[in-house]
Amino acid sequence: MSTSAIVMLIVSIGLVWGGLALAILRLRKHPEQPEEEA
Image (cartoon, rainbow, N blue to C red):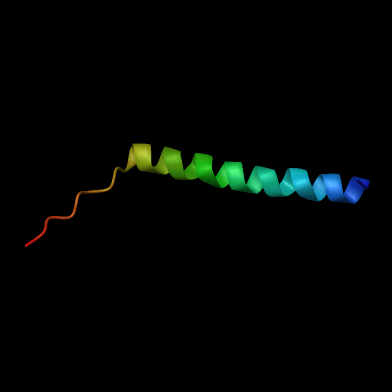
């Protein structure tokens, strides 16, 4: 694989895992309120 392909791979993996980590941290600080069914 070329150098640019490896760099793009690392960036995309970082975006996915970084977004997942941010979502988990955000849910820990502000847990979703369970919706009450009427």
